[in-house]
Image (cartoon, rainbow, N blue to C red; front, side, top):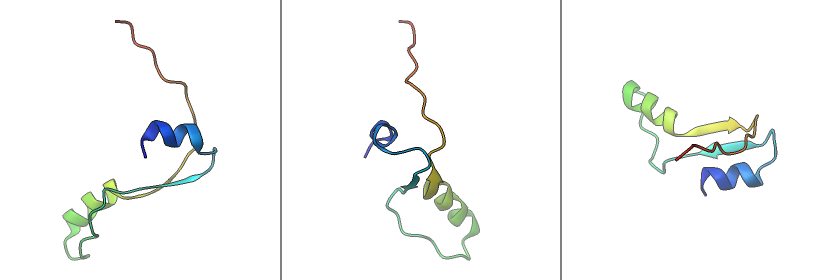
Length: 56
């Protein structure tokens, strides 16, 4: 699902789970785990804005 579809269909306050599909690395690999956590997690939709129009 694309980000624009999620913004169009999800309600404000909804929890959005995002992932890149890779498995979680073991805790002993702290740098790999930190990078994985940046790309995989849960967030709450708190604001919706119309798309920005840029001049040509």
